[in-house]
Image (cartoon, rainbow over all chains, first blue to last red; front, side, top):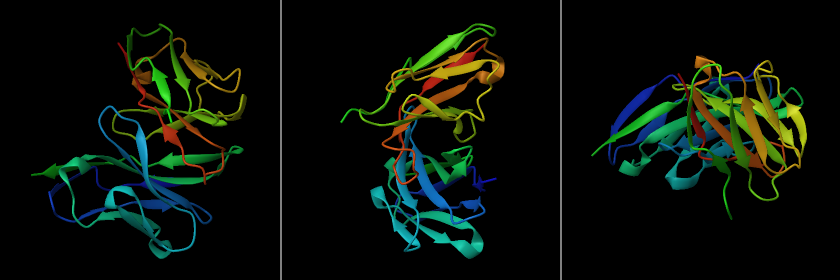
Length: 115
Length: 115
């Protein structure tokens, strides 16, 4: 069964500082990996995704993530955080299950940005 | 292009009552998903439709939850009777097709409180 672990429930960074959110996955084959962001009262928005090829993936809003198969990780990074990045971030792994293509989400990391 | 629409945005009911949520996906999207997001957790897939057929309902508590997408466009999720543990945000998402290469677009969700 596929699963995702986000070890950090809360992270606080200062505006302008760099950010790294951790994600570890479990999946039997080559995974499809995603990062979503959720602002209060909003639905989830896709930041970036990895299917194959280059292991460093660029996304929207200046985010990037690196797929490391040896570590079963897909960490999200941003070199300089803006106050508007405060939100909850979810890592997800996708795979075939029950006849459909299913996303399994982690429990999320709440990001707080200090001005 | 209009996004995924959901209503109502908020609902408070007493346990053992029934409730229904409505979702209108992005026009032309064949695949529709209902997720349950309990506070402090990531979204969990309840049911996935491809047009008007069910692809995956393995995590839908069928003794109390039901969903339909009769004309392959909008969808309704019903809970009858509700339990306290059903308090959550119910997210609807849609994608062009069910393969994971197609992005899932999420609606703003319906926040259900069962008292």
